[in-house]
Length: 178
Image (tube, rainbow, N blue to C red; front, side, top):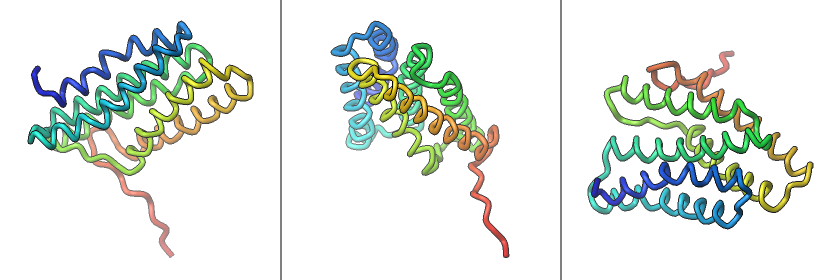
């Protein structure tokens, strides 16, 4: 694989076990260094692909899949540490699987939703918050706040699952009829 954009995406998935280990071992410098690279690579991979004319369905799947692997592994580790609800990493994997299956059923073409985009960003924000609480602010109030944020994101992810039936298109929000 010599596509630079794909290598940037793949690096996130490959660094996920190291990030989980660093979180588990309370290795702050390693945690933040990996997280910084993950954010930079996530910003750059799409730009590199578009600039080189290499943007593709595979690249989109690899990009989103790498994001899923990274956030799921770190969030699962945080859940085992008692910082986040155990349901959240399970829901993230289910939502990504449903998203990928819906794209395949539609013959390609990843059609994300605004809620999906917001959740995708929120997963990274939550990972950053986990790193801060785990490494620098292990106070009970911070852990409780993190748990609450995790449950809000779990509910939001569940909403994504409900709105996108297996293999189907995203369902519109119900409208009120007078």
